[in-house]
Image: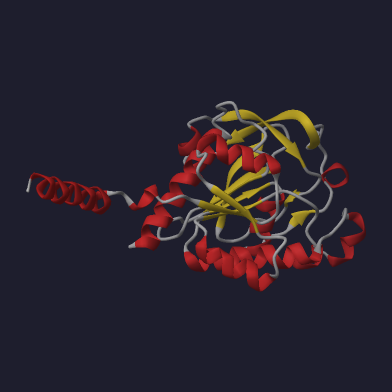
Length: 258
């Protein structure tokens, strides 16, 4: 009899624990548009249980289908975007290597993520691709098209950025400026209509951060020209962005589970 009572009590407690567990305890799945080893390390530094998957090695149909099981999308850095996508096809020769397949994939991923209400973070090329997807254009080559002393294309050097007050980026990082790692020769030229600038290069005004102009009712979307996945060690322009992305991913996951 006592054994039976103990079993019933154990069963009741087990059911109670399961029923009271938060949906957000489910493992997060973060999609990368293309593999970036630093992103794996970056994400694991904040959530060692998060699953990170790459979509570039899959067919377009497979990648889009895989998005249904993901909680956030990171558009990673990489090669130049085909300038014909933003009305500058005649400047193609001034670009570096172009990956047309990747361009097609990332535009489709952004479109699907927006339809799903999935959080999106764009890094370097990823910020540029978000802008192109929103109807914006790019500076083809900063060294020749912009009068600046800032070396934007350097893998180890840093340069200053200024955060625009009143933006989600300012709220997230709680800083007004900082030094970041960048490695790009292109940048945003004309800003896509639904976007606003959240950060600029301090010395030359190059756009370094973007977000929704009117975020009310929209899913999380943010782009940065720098590489937060390289600038770890508690830097608010890296760590705070990651924490925000993971929080938004949990929020999306919880909504999806309702």
